[in-house]
Length: 434
Image (cartoon, rainbow, N blue to C red; front, side, top):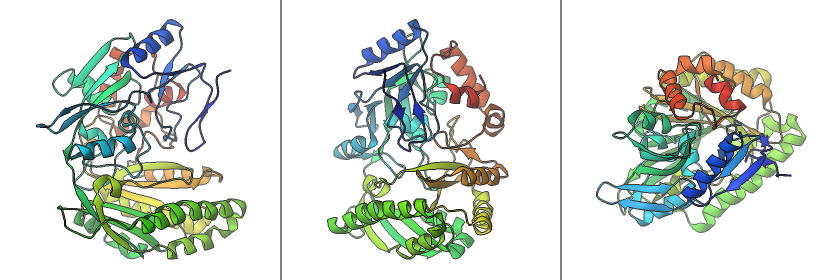
């Protein structure tokens, strides 16, 4: 019997009929043709960091971990071609060695590059965009086993759809990325009053290249992370190794795991626990290579819902969420995260033609997040919230069509590339309206 597949958060379990590992494009072609010939659907597994059942299948589960590495470099244009299964934790130092970097990243680096763009992974910065906006070209294996290369100049409609493709158009085997020259970030982190930060949140977001905030429910404390680009030799040095190990390994992971286990056993302690956690937030300042600042280790497992709302809605959304916590005293030991991005032109990007604030709520994987996620979704529904494609939500095709102006254009591309729905599952039938 084929072993069950589980995502990182542990909330999605699948029982594929076949699990196929590939390390070549020819291997992908063979797997696609085999699944089609046997009447099975096929889904591609990345690193499993989506909390939606985007990958779950009872057909063929295709693992592309063997497709990894930088396979081509255009130094004049600062573009690289990358195999689809390359994890970001390998890609970032490889780009650094070439004197290059991605202009923006999320806050973890466990995802594969193809998984990150398929779900719209974004990062933060009001003058920045998500990772998919840096995609300059894609190569896919289609449902008939043929290869298709797309870019803004070649198969442009496929390109626009495939930049956030949900794994529903074909199997991405190669990604071309528009990079920038490698750069350093000056990081300043401090615990502050949530009430005061909320009153000036837009000015704060615009004042910095990248802003990330973590607010502990049931407290008035928020960890504010200000990251700004600095030149070579500017700003302080990197964190000493002992400090990085203390903050990011011991406190942020081992101690925090213990805190969450206590909260899971005795939910009534969460309010006190959060106040202790918030008071423990220490200020720190350092500068380092961009990807080392953007990405941090997240070992404590959780389940997450994240919505993009118009920038103007971030303050009322957070105030309503704070009011809900005050009324219910819901036991949630994880902080609420707040980020920002500029608008882009990617059809299924949450930032399509809209500057966004992103609000994410998390629950420890051993605790019930049902009430939290339902309340959060009801709040953002009043503010045209667009759900992150890889994080928990309940929206179906009718609502998503109203939120995404190019939704039906995206579906038309899918109808052309995969009319027989080889690349589908229950989740996609729900969100795409099959």
